[in-house]
Image 1 (spheres, rainbow, N blue to C red):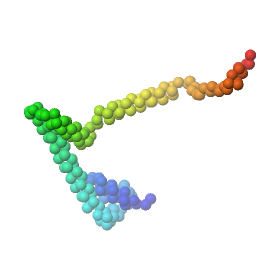
Image 2: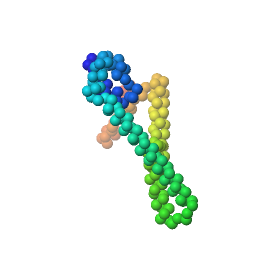
Image 3: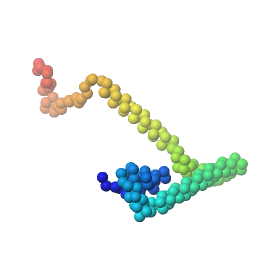
Image 4: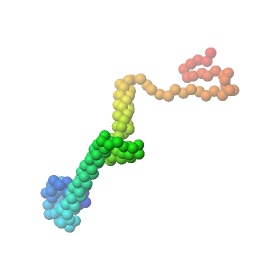
Length: 167
């Protein structure tokens, strides 16, 4: 089996607990082979860049979450503290809808429609599973019933089915 250095590199970069020794054991190669590949392809540098990038994304996400939460709180406070015109209320309503959508995305919260869709899908899945298990339990045969087509000319002719006698 050939050593897949790209797979080993991706594993090392994506998993901070992964070591050269663990990779050598996993891929059945010597430690020196892993160390050489790591040095040539700058695994340590790539891992550090990935980690820094993830931390940066997490910080940005945290800042955005705090900003959305604070904006919603201040808009609600403004609604109750001041007398507002119809246009002000419409604008605040639009802003709140937008901020609520942002919060849903940031926190991974489903909308009512998405939640209902998932619930319905789960119920359908349960029904299909129940139907499958009940049909496995039944020894009844299921099939298709064939109904012969009659032309106007054949209307007076008698149809004889298999197993029946013509009278």
